[in-house]
Image (cartoon, rainbow, N blue to C red; front, side, top):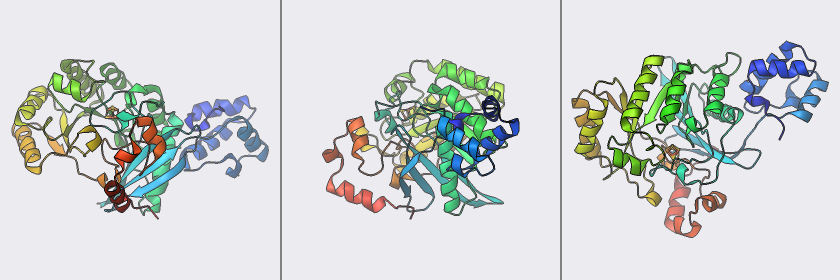
Length: 383
Ligand code: SF4
């Protein structure tokens, strides 16, 4: 496949074009267009000479996913895109929209870093995809650009924040994730500040330590979901390779190196990790750490036996953690009606048979007439 110039940094594009006999400023012109436009096209880059555009089109490409499906939640506060790359690989990307707060509105783009995931977390739809690949930096940036265009179309000022919480484990694809952050951060690109970017991991200890040494002010969110080692092993088999004290030491190292408080994500699942005994274990694990807790009432994933906690149970759990002096926030529930909430991303919208074949989901069993009717009711195309 031809090289994807959307994955190139400005410095790399300058030297790429210099090797083609072009002056340095042509590389910077190309970088601006490749990074700032949702649908960059060599032919439309009228500030470049036609002969150069033709040469570039013959020897390189600009990664540009097709939008296969678009959904907007009934509350119009969450959108989801199903994107297909040139090789047919598909991912989903979610966009959370927050109306004007003080001076500006906010749009957070939740990007995928892989088209599936090997970690196999019990509560996650993405983990059902057994065939997948890492996404390139250009493919990650292209998701943000698609989100930016959609946010503007919906009346917002564009993407302001990016979270690596979509499909895949970002730290299993660290080089491309780091490169994509540098591209998003670039003053000639989308100019998304590092402090507005968060990488979420299921807890790959060596990679957390390496990320601390990136020298960036990127936020880190670690999925814990249980401070009981055996329970966590069942919930997150891919992350259980490291002991809980090793994980905590890596999180503290991140805080020390970057000065940024780490967030500990805790998906509260009915009957699994929502008891007061679970809350006490979480408190013991975090006491003295300055780590913030983000409680995420689990989104139902019936095919994996995951159910949302009762409101009273959720409240009791949070009270027990807060009263022990641990800072805690409960994540606002949004996007569940279009399966765009945490743990619900997969590479299909509605009744896509290709994705079902990949996960082994049985089409007939999964889509009862009632379920199909509900899906249709919930589905709200953007236009
Ligand atoms: S929660 Fe994250 S790490 Fe776990 S299977 Fe899903 S995408 Fe992978």
